Each structure stands twice: as C-alpha cells, then as structure tokens.
Image (tube, rainbow, N blue to C red):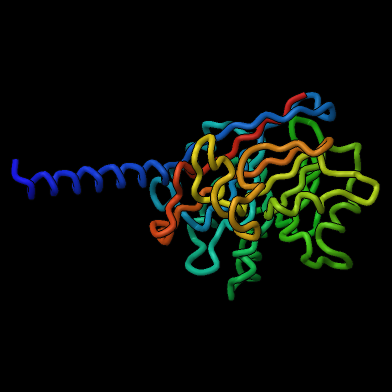
Length: 277
C-alpha cells in the first residue's frame, strides 16, 4: 500500500470514529434516580424533561422520546426550562407537550431561553392551554391518592407578584405535603431555603447541560456550564442538602449548532425519578 493510500485510510478511520462518537453523543439515554421519603405511602414516578431546546427524537413528532416516556410508565411528566430555544421554532416542543399531557398529568416551568424570545408571552399562552405554567406559583396534584405540591421558579432573583418568585414559593411551603420545586438554574440551590432553614423535599434543575465536555473519573461535572463557568460544581446527578434532594438533568438538547460545541461523554438525558417510601 502506498503512503498516500495509508494516509487516506488513516484519515477515513479517524473521520469514522469521530462520526460514531458524535452519533453516540447525541443519542438519548434514560437515567434513573431513586429518592426516599416518609411523606408518601405509595410513592410515585416522575419523568423529568429538561433543556429540550425544541429538538426532536425519532420523527419530528418526537415519537422516540414519547415511546421512552411510555416505557417508563410515569405517574407524572414534568417539563423543566428551555423546552424551546431563544430563536427558531416551537412546534416540536409544543407537539411533545400536547401528546404527553393527553396521557399524563403535566406541569411546566420555563428557563432563561424562553424569556429571551420575542414571542415569549404567546408561547406561554399556548402552553397554558396544555398544562399549568409555574412561575412563582404552586400547583397541587393528586398522585396515587396522595397530594403532591409542585412549585416553579424561572430564576431565584426574578420578580413575582410581590416578592421574588423563589420567595413566593418558600412562603407557600407546607411540611404536610411532599414539596417539589422546579428550579431551572442548579447553582441557585443555596437560595432555596427559608430564614428558618425550611426547604423543599425535592428540587429539579437543568440548564447546565451536564457541563458539556465530561471525562469519566476526571471531569465528572464537566468543563463548562452557563452561569458557573469553567469547572462547574452543579451539572449532573443527585445531591443531598440536609433534608432536600437535588437532581440535575443533563438535558436533551442536541441542536445543530452543538456540532461546533459537541457533547463529549455526555449523552442527552431523559430523567426518570422514583420517589419511594
């Protein structure tokens, strides 16, 4: 084999490996979490969909993502922030939310990208026709005969009706219930406790995209995350702060622009959360 042919073969092999890694890196992975509580006798299962950025899996009707949700057999589907991007369409996200709300109780709290669009309020109105939108609000659901309270915060400093959205949620806390907070930005977890130390039972976050570039055993939390910078602390996994459990999803974003900033050892995540007695 000539030197030129060997060179072409090496280039082709490297290109093939890079393509395979890229395809693997964009492949959705269901990730299971287990949480314990004494407040629920029967427990419940939540599917948490975060940072979709209007992507689709399977056909444009998100058939593959919907199939994965059905396989999980959740009691509830929770949509975290950035279901759409700061630019582009909204149809894939809205179609997904409509399809799943027809099968399961759903709730949604926006992220930073929704607020950067020109059609923010129009999008929120469309979502409100599908499921509750929580921004400094609380919504109570009956799941398996148990009353569960969901709260939603776009940003810990964003203003609500009379206080910040987070302060308004903390004011509504009642220890008789299992209290779940949707907090888009995970680095704000330290703000989620009242002056008396009272906190939520479970906090669900996204935003950090798993730290973008991760290396097992070396960069477990990734290289970079928005609002945290280089070597971020909160990007993926499960944390425990006193009686509060904090789960951070790597999210489902895989838009075309991420080809130039690819996810490395950081597959998009569909979070499946079991809350057990």
